[in-house]
Amino acid sequence: MEYLEVRDAICVLAVAEEQSFSRAAERCYISQSALSKIIRKTERNLGVELFSRGCVPVRLTAEGERFLGLFRKMYDTHLEMEQLSDEIRRRKKSDLSIGAASYFCTYVLPGIIGDYNLENPEVNIKVIESNDKEKVEFLHSGICDIGISVNTEMPSDLDYFVLCRENILLAVPKELKVNHGLEKAALSYSDICSGKYLDPDTPAVSLKKFEKENFLFLRQGNDLWTRGLAICHDAGFEPKILMELDQLQTAYYLADAGKGVAFIRAGIPYYVGDSGNLNFYRIDHPKMSREVRVYYNKEEKFPKVQKDFMEYLKKYPVFA
Figure 1 (cartoon, one colour):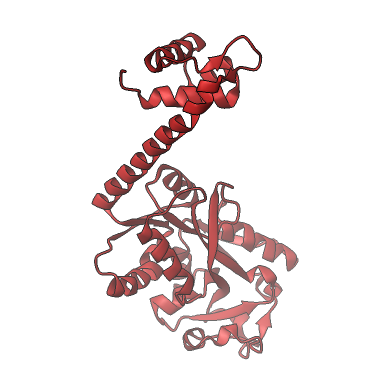
Figure 2: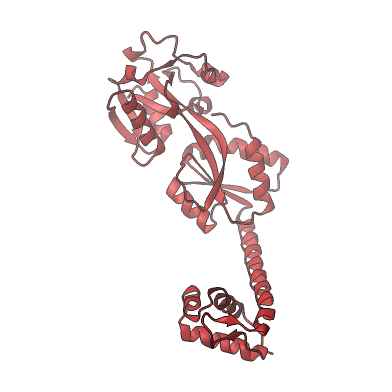
């Protein structure tokens, strides 16, 4: 008997599952005549007839039923070998790859990875700065094993768990007159570091008080663009958007330079440090907090290092 090829198993399984040579050919991306030749060659090679062609739909013969399980094992073994090969190839480059926005790559992930490597020094973790569109492409192609995002509308073939709930504050230059009368609600850098902004007794203010100020927004397509507009509209005004920016850190530094007010992550001043130029305010609106999610491929069989790191992330105290 000649050696059987994986392609032969794929074609036999396709005909058996589709019960049609034409549909099986479409599934295998070959012509029906080419599929028929492969099936005939396989039958000659095995010395049996696998399918009864005289009935509609096409059915397996008794001999075909006996061989079907072996074809499945052959195909499953091929998939296992592919997965092992991919895993080994990835390991040569890195044990784990994470896609995330600039903020997480710069401030959040280095500490997490550093702490993880204290316990697992042999694990090499690569971080890839990426936007949400790139993260989806990287996850689907295997370039990234996991992706971190605040986007709640990712493709359905990606699963996720919540890393943390992130809080958003309004950063306001201290030099602006709008701060007058809001002293009890103004939060300092130390209030953020101590977690006072999370205390429900800490006063929140209405965004309406800032309607005459210039706003520093992220570009359309970013969650904080949509979220920020909704909060302004709910407060009854259209914001005067002075600039639309790519990075939240840029908005923060421009606010720090007195160019306008900006919605920022509470974590930014915590990680960046105190310049003394800004007041921070809790805004009385439910959209001033959001989930940070860790996305991964739903159906993928994970390497042990990925499972371990995801479990580590679930327990890690992220400042948000």
